[in-house]
Image (cartoon, rainbow, N blue to C red):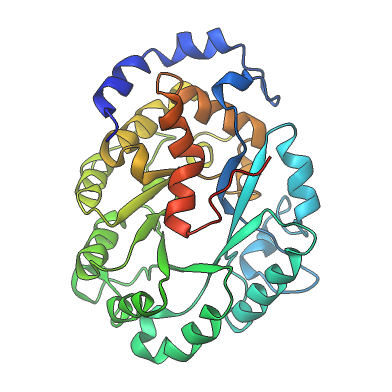
Length: 322
């Protein structure tokens, strides 16, 4: 078990630590001793707008174009990424299986893709069983992500049937990635409570308001969620939640420290949210900030955050890629 309090004490004084590491905006300047192994990126999107439809991209000049593995490879620079978990990219509802099939074909040329988190309408309850059966024959499919409805007519704000659909995942050994909007952590906590035999991965640290430094009641809600041992958390999306033009590592400090304090390294995994992250940061700069945030921890704890927790949660091949 990680001594989280000791970590927080050692990792205090983010500003001094950051300056001492000589980090450079847009460059990967972390000493290799800080991160001496290839990382697992648990949150990567690929899309080809000429192949599938992504309605949400239509208003984004930055993102409304193909983002493919070769683009990712250029974006990471000298950061060593050994494994990638692809997370569904909100394509049109009638193309979600096609998205999985397409990403599966990418593996031939990009073997670092070792897990897929697909999109299935689990709010349909047991009616989704045939779709889950079809996905489960693909060994790359490790879990499902489904964004919560914004409707609150059901108890606790849960869409009718969602818990039943999530409970079906246990039959196939699949996990659930929690895609939330701000303020929905309590809804996620209720779902986790109702599904004790399914493991959950909270995306983007539960979407706190980092930009305005308004972290309550998020702090209390995260602690309540973390009390369930089947709940895990991705250290992803933090820069995107901050001021895109002017964020500094210090701005991310309170939220990142709180996540580690609540979940520990044994239930926290690194993720990038590439290419969505590009609205706020280059890939190496986010890695720099994440490494800096845990510079006071042990090598074993860094390996858990940047590799082992992801391998264990998603059932990835355990050997470190070199």
